[in-house]
Amino acid sequence: MIETPPATLRLRVDTGALGHNWRALDRLSGSASAGAAIKSNCYGLGIEKCLPVLRDAGCKAFYVAHWSEVAGAANHVPAEQIAVLHGPITDTEARYALETGAVPVINTLEQARRWNEAGGGRCHLMIDSGINRLGISLHEVGDPAIAALEVDVIMSHLACADEDSAMNARQLARFRKVLPLITHRAESLANSAGIALGSDYHFDLTRPGLALYGGVPRSELAGTIRQVAFPEVSVIQRRSIEAGETVGYSATWTAKQRTEIAVASLGYADGFLRAWHDGEPHLLRGETRLPIIGKISMDMIVLDCSAMPDLREGDWLSVPYWLPNAAQRSGLSQYELLTILGRRFDG
Ligand SMILES: *Cc1c(COP(=O)(O)O)cnc(C)c1O
Image (cartoon, rainbow, N blue to C red; front, side, top):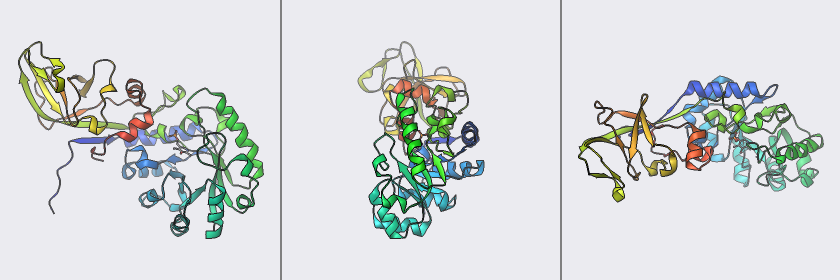
C-alpha cells in the first residue's frame, strides 16, 4: 500500500493542559465529581488523543450525542461509563444499548416505554427544566413509564449558564422540585459554565465539555483553564515580490517595497476565517509575528516574512488560537470554533 504523506496542517493537542483542565473542573465541582462531554469527537480535538487523558485523570462518566460514537469511546473506557445523550429513538438503538452496555439517556415518555419493553435496566433520565430541547417535561414526571425506569443519574441542562440570567435560578428551582418525585441514584445539572455558577448547581456530578478543551465560557474560569488545541500549518512556498506588486484575489494588498512573502497551507476550507482577526492578522513562528497579507483563499494564506529570512518550505507555523479572543474576533462561539477546525488537520 502507498502511504499518504502527512497533512500540511496539524492540530497539536496539549494533553497536559487537557488533564489539568479536567482536574481543575473536578476540583471546582466541590463535593461533586466531574464527568466529561466527549461528543463530536471531543469537540473536534480527537477522541483517540483526548479520551485516554480524561480517563487517566480520573474521569468516570462520559457523554456522547450519538450511538455511532459509542464504539470509538468504548475502545478506551468501560461502556457502562458512556451515556448517550440522544437516547434510544428506535428499537435497534435500545437493543444496541443492551448489547454494548452503553447507557441511554431517556428523553421522552416514548423512549422510556421503548427502553422498558426492550428489557430496560440502568439508564439516565433527562428532565427538561426550560431549555425545551431534550428531556421529559415537568408534567410528565408522574407517568408510569418513568416510574418503571431504573434511573441512575437524573439530569437537566442549563440554557444560559454562560450568562448572568434569571433563567439559571429558574431552571435550578424546577430541577430541585422534580428530584423527590423520581427514584434515582445521582443528580447532575451543570455544564462547564454551570460549574462556575456555584455549589448550588453542582449536585453529585458535573458535565463539562467546552472548558476541558480550552474554552472559557465564564470569566470566573479565565485564570484556571489552559489552552489545549494548537493548530499548526506548513509553509508551502516562499518568494520575493517587488514594490508595487499585489498579493492574492482582488489584489487587495500592494507591496510598498521589495517584500519577502511566504504561502502557508491554511484557508477558509480549513475553518480559518477572514473575520478571525480585528487587529493585524498574523501567524506565529515562536514569538515572531508574521502578518497575513491579502485575502484568505480556500487553502492558502500569504504572509509577510521579511522579518524571518531563514523561513523555508516545510517549516511549521502556529495559528493564534486562544478561544475567547478568536470568538470575539470572528463572531462565532467558542463551540463553533473548536468543532469547525478543518478535518484536514492531521489528528
Ligand atoms: C454538550 C453538553 C454538555 C457540555 O456542555 P459544555 O457547555 O460544553 O460544558 C453537558 N451536558 C449536556 C446535556 C450536553 O449536551
